[in-house]
Image 1: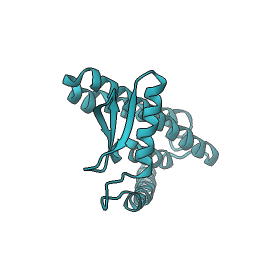
Image 2: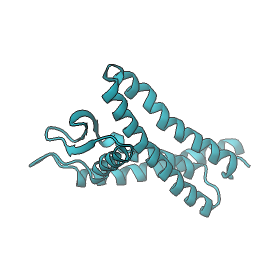
Image 3: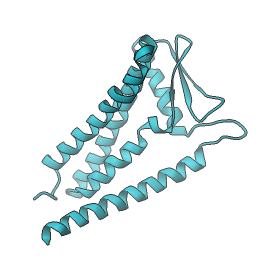
Image 4: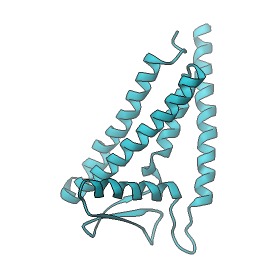
Length: 178
């Protein structure tokens, strides 16, 4: 029975924290994205696109981000060519919420939990920026592999990162297993 109690506590902490964070994020999206009078993506999505351009510029790639005028996305252009688009799902916030809910469910000491949430979220955010930049360049250079790159390779990078962060947390910092 004690083992079932731990599982139920884990599930309750996970779903409550996920629901609260996702509700806050949904509220943010409703209040920051606009479709009239013109399309405007949420600030965080626009920032992800702009930061991706800065990364590309740092590596010598001529890039530009501009709000798409027919949908809620930001177009990424490389050498003036529309190469990729950044949509709400590309900004990694939903994945960071999932990451945080898991860490809360497997919580450890408060200070370690909060620091791990902070640094883990920053790692996920930065890896995501690198992933978008790399994906944009790869699609620009190898457009015939766009589906493979976008649907398989690049999700593996971000989900793999999150999984490794979870494993590290459970094995090194969480008190739930003890």
